[in-house]
Length: 448
Image (cartoon, rainbow, N blue to C red):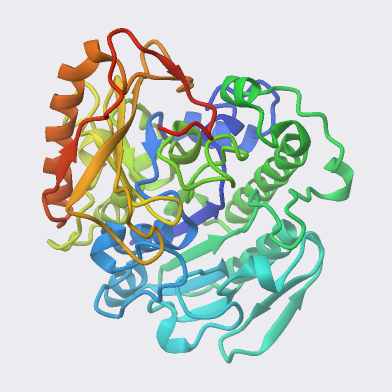
């Protein structure tokens, strides 16, 4: 019997909003239980901290510059097959609920732009078609459908109905459930939690936000309220799977597209290489993932598609740039930490970064348009963080003369990863401000 697959996908969720991510507020008991009984990736990252590009990465197992989705508002090319395409070919019934963000416009998504999903209840830009208590999506025939309840509950209810409709079917299913929360509501620039949680005290301020400020003091309580309601929805999905007798044969995946830095690193909430933007929650349960434990190898969102295909006994296409983590899950292979993480940044800057066990090293292309230009032949160093001694990335070492050897090594590693991702190997220029022993506190606005 083939495994069913259900992807529970949130939007803009910080790694440290979960108990497994060391948040002490008790917001995510269902996620934490799923992670402790399944397989939890301790070090998981988004390779592109922007909504559309991250989704293209997840759907295809390819980097954003490879698919052409290096920024928002770029339709996903039909030249690149999605997870739905591969599961369709394997005899699965595929469904999609919620935010898509890989087509043109904000509203309905034409059938030929849905990434191959057979059943549909979504909107291209859910943040523009709905508000927290008014959820508007579109069905298979592009007809508008209003769903009752708080938006998280409305989409979770739709997913439970989908599951119930599949209970007598012999075909396995692949369902992608894509929430907007805890993303901010664009028209309000606010994080509207359900009414009962709207004024929830933050309880815990992550050290980077406490040091740098931004809008965290204003928005973190609402953000946490959204996370709490998402976790309650996860629990309801888990209960539905159990009551329908599907829990033992369904792989449940929980992740997000990127994190949230609350305007501490640039003028909005993401689009930076910092841990607050790129480190994400990622957990698997069911099938071969049950009892897998905690993975210490670094995992990228680009690895999820090949991992799910592999876990379901399907061939991983050779053109996927991610890799299956199943050898780690099944304890067939162990590495101290796995490969380094490659990050592409757009819309705020044309940038690239590499995240190793200890270091975060980032470069940008001065003079390039971060919306029009997807890459460059020349970059200049802008960040170096020693994550062992500075895990919240408060001290930028890029201008430290004593760290020049580290930068040289990381620059070569970064160029190699860019080449592996299909990019031109660039020239990387050293920072022009290196001075002996100089350390700088980065507050998100400093001119580097």
